Amino acid sequence: MPLPDAEVLLAALTEQMRPAVSSDTLLVGIHTGGVWLAQRLHESLGLSQPLGTIDVSFYRDDYSSRGLHPRVKPSEIPFEIADADVVLVDDVLFTGRTIRAALNELFDYGRPRRVRLAALVDRGGRELPMAAQFVGAEVSVREDEQIELRKAADGRLNLVVTPSPGAG
Amino acid sequence: MAYNPQLNANGELQHLLTIEGLPREIIVSILDTAHSFLSVAEREVKKVPLLRGKSVFNLFFESSTRTRTTFEIAAKRLSADVINLNVGTSSQSKGETLLDTVANLSAMHADMFVVRHAQSGAAHLIARHVAPYIHVINAGDGRHAHPTQGLLDMFTIRHYKKEFSNLRVAVVGDVLHSRVARSQIHALTTLGVPEVRVIGPRTLLPTNVSELGVQVYHDMAQGLKDVDVVIMLRLQNERMNGALLPSAQEFFKYYGLTPEKLALAKPGAIVMHPGPMNRGVEIDSSVADGRQSVILPQVTFGIAVRMAVMSILAGNT
Image 1 (spheres, each protein chain N blue to C red):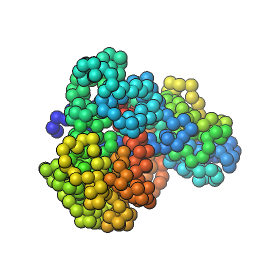
Image 2 (cartoon, chains in turn purple, cyan; image 1 turned 60 degrees about the horizontal axis):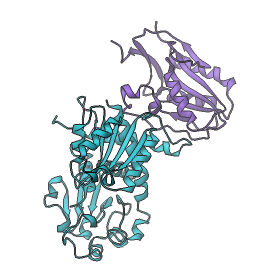
Image 3 (cartoon, helix red, strand yellow; image 1 turned 90 degrees about the vertical axis):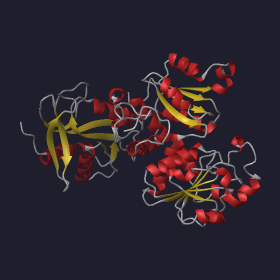
Image 4 (cartoon, helix red, strand yellow; image 1 turned 135 degrees about the horizontal axis):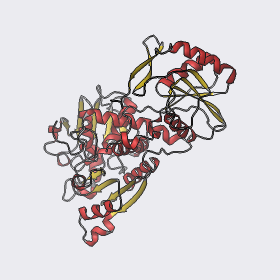
């Protein structure tokens, strides 16, 4: 099955979110693809608060088997999380483990009033009880494949299917 | 690649014993990871769960308040359980050997040892004898190495100067007795600093120091000219047996960093010191507390760097 156009999905995601966010909604993108999406959403939704970013490497549950990710980036949450209305943004929702890690990290900054999740694509395969409130599209790929969001030099986003690193 | 007792079969860091021979990519990845740990200290919960359930033993055969404390804070911010042992005052004084002490602590399910010892090579010896899942960090061995101090100094330099490739760095004072100086020199040359100078009296510089790839100066006015970074070393009174120096006052006169001597360096030069400082011996108070001093940021950065080292080691099994 060919993957949908990421730019079309992003436009759909934006329109889903528009009536559901207010000017004080805080967007937090999950590195790396989620940050690109959050930047675009932040701009098109005209949110007034700065953008947050999270790298979940310090909270991953596979650290003891896979070690620390060699290119971990700093998380930046430039606002008060306590009592905030947060939307986490990720590119691909799959097992739910990244979202679990992101929630744990978020709560180390404070207790948000509400956290919702926006994902460009949902490929199913959940291993934890996670659900996204905003989804660009549901797609299915083989178990030994992964979906990656990429950003071209001109800033355009596109989705590609690659062999999963753990497969084979 | 030559055998390196610090690396595992995949070339990943298994122990941190010395900066000498450490690949540049590993040093850079430690500095990059430390950068991401900096912001953890600014949050409401200053902890991440990486080392949850792990036991880190601070094994200090030689006393050091600051280094031990920063390792303890680093391990606690990684959620490890930390056990501090001042071994000088316990089993060793009853005659237990170093390796027996380590074997006993391993039987208590230690996952990591942070070792400070007056003998050069003590951390290497422990690393050779521990089980493969145990990691060892050298927190200073004799005159040999103090790798986390060297790394935090590199982090500090990168923080203020961004690049290493255009720098002139001077290491000043008692290089002869300084494991810190050795670690700094290896790190600076590995990271591609084009000009590393050591400045000190003949009696406090190792005879073969130029073989480390540094330029040797005995005069502060010449050595400090146009440098970007001035690293002062502590005058190690407790390591000096015999008369290497006429007096601390005379040392200060020729090698103490005063505002007048610092003015010879580049205008934006930073001043570093690994601590503890001897004010009025190697550094004047007005410089230590002055605008160009980054001595306290070094301490803060040291925690993030030690968190990075511990989390990289513990993840490499």
